[in-house]
Length: 395
Length: 63
Ligand SMILES: Cc1cc2nc3c(=O)[nH]c(=O)nc-3n(C[C@H](O)[C@H](O)[C@H](O)COP(=O)(O)OP(=O)(O)OC[C@H]3O[C@@H](n4cnc5c(N)ncnc54)[C@H](O)[C@@H]3O)c2cc1C
Ligand code: SF4
Image 1 (tube, rainbow over the protein chains, first blue to last red):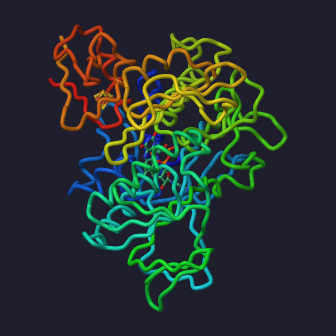
Image 2 (cartoon, helix red, strand yellow; image 1 turned 30 degrees about the vertical axis):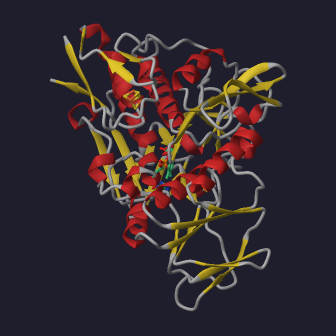
Image 3 (cartoon, rainbow over the protein chains, first blue to last red; image 1 turned 120 degrees about the vertical axis):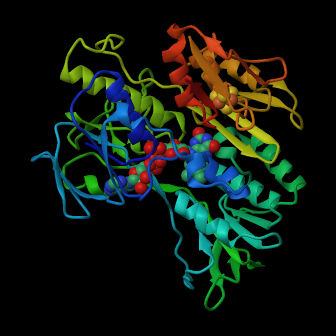
């Protein structure tokens, strides 16, 4: 039983089959669509006239032999009796459970809490409704200057919209990639005509029936037709509650991605993967963390498929070693105007950040060190060099 | 023999495929992707991994 039919869920099913699992696979998904790729939603999909078919993952149904139940959410999990109940009322028994329900966009609440003219971006349907409202010359306020906020700023600016970005931080991305890197990204956005309102927040909306503007914490009023909230996301964990599963900030797992209870024991048949999984470091004594990067659903899904096949038929999965720990190298990319960022590792762990190659203002690579060890790299351009440094990262 | 196709209009040259199937894919001096259009059957699993990790869904196996 795989709950969440997005990239993580699909890759888990594929991994199960590739590692020899021959039982039944059910994939339950709240969205009405078969799994598709999310990154283009903030990039190509808004910019070009693309459809769901362009971003859908290819699925070999003959090989996968999986039962997709779409447009249905799992409402409750009963771990004691090993079943889940869907919004349709249907109940499914399971031997193994994989939680892959990812995240949803965080929504703000304002005194004048208008609904029309407000958007967020997590799903294809979100992207469609945003795209339908766009036109050159439209005034768009984006709240949040994280990766999704900045990508949206770039994509919509390229489409001819007028963009104001509002964010509480002084330098975009500084908390993730450091001040110099963040400043460099901001500068390139400003060159393209994006306006920033940093160290500010939106305290209220202006308008009667739909959003006509926003009021900032410093008293500024910004007129706009479209407000996009890109202020991070929340894990979809509600369906797991009531089972003594440790659910603070995602689903806590052990080193093998088995879900853990509040009292610190692992459930042998229950796994979490992708954006929702909060997994421990395999070599560092730091708190477990979630990683919202595209390669984590892939790697964690592959791992869990093999774990389950191995549990079913010990010895059947050749490449799997006993005592092995899940230890992925996070990788991340982002496209904003002509800026393409490529990053490996976990720059947020660093206590020191230094320019490794190139020069700010042009193409460059920053290295991130913790106690002298390289824990991450990130570059604008210079991909081949960034890729070379990948092997030197110690996590 | 397997046949590999990369839609270079989709490819953003991140080189993720290079790590999965280094015998097939590489980034050249200009950071652009180059690949071998045909390969030995023994590369099939690597190419499938490369297909999975390509962020742009640009790689295909052709029959
Ligand atoms: C706009 C956007 C751009 C991105 N760009 C990049 C990028 O450039 N680079 C990068 O590295 N990463 C990027 N990411 C992140 C990447 O897409 C995610 O890491 C990845 O989608 C996570 O996959 P997942 O399967 O864990 O979760 P999700 O893709 O979130 O899938 C979870 C699925 O579970 C469903 N679900 C939730 N609750 C239930 C329930 N109770 N019952 C049944 N189904 C349920 C949801 O509807 C959803 O379909 C981007 C994400 C977004 C949204
Ligand atoms: S992984 Fe995909 S996008 Fe990246 S270089 Fe290879 S084919 Fe191109």
